[in-house]
Length: 292
Image 1 (cartoon, rainbow, N blue to C red):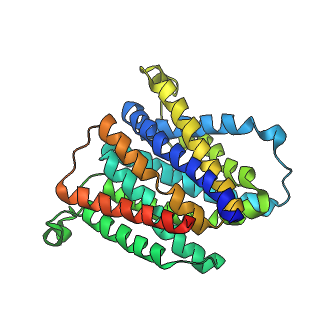
Image 2 (image 1 turned 90 degrees about the vertical axis):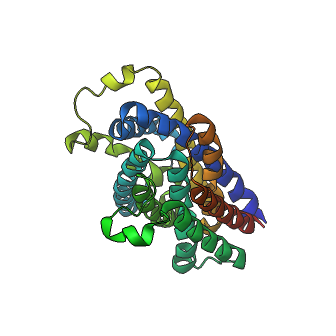
């Protein structure tokens, strides 16, 4: 009971941070592109994170810092792809698919860390899988497999890859979190902002896009909300199971989909609506069974 009481509030904070923050991420990506959005998102995340540095505990295991750096690089790649998917695809659909990472995190946490999977979570995972198929594949999928045009939206393929990466990432992050704490396990990711101009992901005048109307405040709000969500997740798993925190935090697409329908006016086919409802139902079922 104490575990639930400590972990769930942070999971709910992550839910709100990610759900609302992704709306602003989508707006920023469509204003200045996914590369520049990622660059400035990482930069602002690092600046805000460094404000906590005087209060952070000392580093006790540099090997775990190295692991966090490797995981951070993988995380940055997934963020680039996610922002790209939001830029080119249906925001409601992309957010739902990527946010279904709990379908991966829950069983992996059971296998790797011996956490317990209850029957309701299994049903939730099946619902999510069904929903993903319905939401992402065209009716003509079988006929079009050879053409490579199976997916119903241009952002779906990237969103599926992101979901898989996040599922693994948010499972394994428990390893450095348990040794280093929530802060040092998370902050290495944000140092990769320096890498993006070097590898050519972003080019030209990095300040120019910020002069676009509304770009800077949108990025700052997106950073505050998603950083809030990321660290809240790390704090949550210091108190409770990943299989408890991930499904609750992973229900952020429920909030994101509701908001994006008003903000972006995304149109969905009946099949996609059924898929999204099934997916969100699975996430909610997992979250409910985890907190009961």
